Image (cartoon, rainbow, N blue to C red; front, side, top):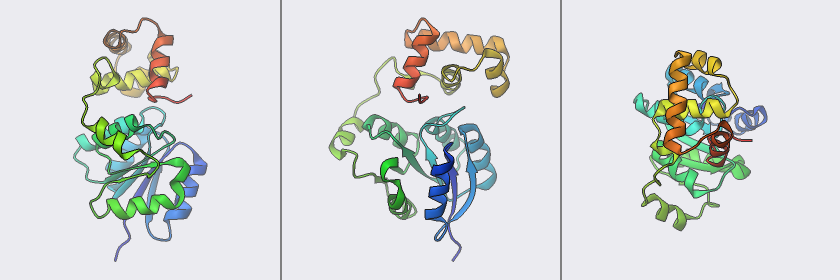
Length: 212
């Protein structure tokens, strides 16, 4: 029987090598992506059975990358890895199309448990996540004025601005004109009620769109 193909997406080399060591006896690690935009390319090219993706990655965070993967109708099972046990991020990961959410502090053997479940069509959440709090939050709508109210393109621009990239750099990354980037930036700040770049960066850090 052919071993399931797994694509790893994480910008920390030690995490990737640790996962590879755990996975390779049972699974085929077919590729590694170090940022969210590289993940989009690798997912389309490799068509893996499972993608293990860090929530926080440069250029495009894991949750937004998975939203785009799902929009492209790719069927890979998604396992999110994160340092954050906050149920808000678990909710967004599941809504984006994830089947599992594993906290990095326990990711060693637990990743094998998550893989076992998702390949059988089940959902897996790290036991450290409060199931009652998650169930309650899943029933709630996202609050107005949050990042969920932005378009996918606006979220991309928000992350890249918060990473400290210039308008010219963002335009090159997204294949748009600098003027279009400035327009998106203006719309983001208006939608979020922000007035300075510093406020925008603080918002992105607080919502783990970027990490310190």
